Image (cartoon, rainbow, N blue to C red; front, side, top):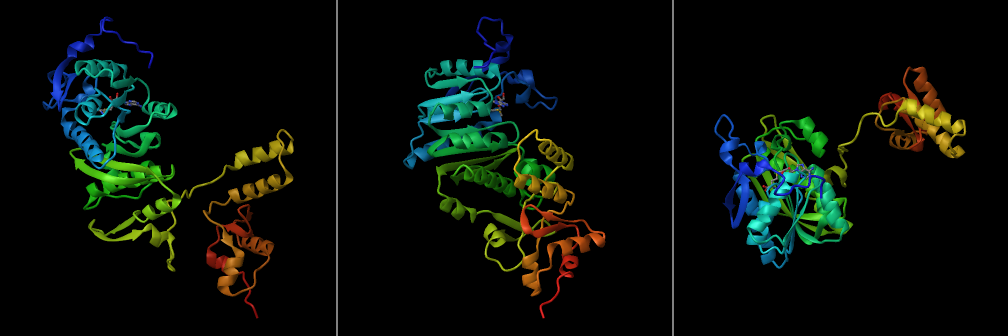
Length: 404
Ligand SMILES: C[S@@+](CC[C@H](N)C(=O)[O-])C[C@H]1O[C@@H](n2cnc3c(N)ncnc32)[C@H](O)[C@@H]1O
């Protein structure tokens, strides 16, 4: 629990701003709408002391329905976790409508948690709603650490869910469900391509089927966050509505073979200048057995080292402040040398020789000749038989002499 202990007799006036309302089978204390109206007459849930948005009722109902369907197909949904619970209405409905035995509900806002407790009592299910008042990630990691198996995790944050995916996926028990709601649809749809790239690691721009792209970006993200934790997703529901997209997936432990199989579902869509889809390219085509040019990326193409730091590190090790082997020191010197060249790849001399059917020139000859021509050139610590240079490949190739 957080340090904002709130009791019913500490003069908390916020209660005056709430009223009892009903959603599904749950009665809840929720903000009095008339007190939080925007100038255009629309209720603004973000202005209220606790968050409850009645227009998201369908979203919550879909959580209940997904759970019921999951149970129908033979999977027990005994426990539910809601890391960003607001009024806890979702948790209450899971118990009252989806027969969930326990709901673990958390919110960082102590008022929310106070109201959650009251709401659980209002529905006579206080013994089934276990409330926490901490950060969503701490909550999920704590449940995981306590070994409490959670059959269904529902993430419903403001904006992007990305911060909460890793810990939530980790928490899900065998064959459990994950529901994720994202309201940053502008980013997911490619309205802000740079944001989409930095947040989700994808290249997307607005096109004629952006809403589906939003869902597919989110699904790809769920795939990726599951895969690195040896899990796979099986999509159950994709639902785009109003200002959000909701995805429900089954999460299962998986072998690397299974993950590899599902990787076939990851790829790119080529779009024309009108934003119309032209064709798809699978990851297999990009990574796989294709003879033609392949795309590699997304990759970091900027600097991979800091010269000043490297110089300092070498200096410190020379001054014997820190032990370092001769081999490592020698390697570090090469690292420093190549750090001056911001070309995001090295060129392998034996390979170029093989392609040109030429002799492999001495590496020092290649480096010196390139430098004499005004290019930057150095050995690379990644590979003894390769060089880093800002000279074009043709320039390097011209230094190979042909076999007689
Ligand atoms: C969109 S509302 C959740 C609504 C709720 N799931 C529902 O169905 O009504 C987001 C909630 O997340 C809470 N919140 C924001 N940041 C948080 C964090 N880092 N950890 C836990 N809760 C957080 C807010 O206080 C707010 O109640």
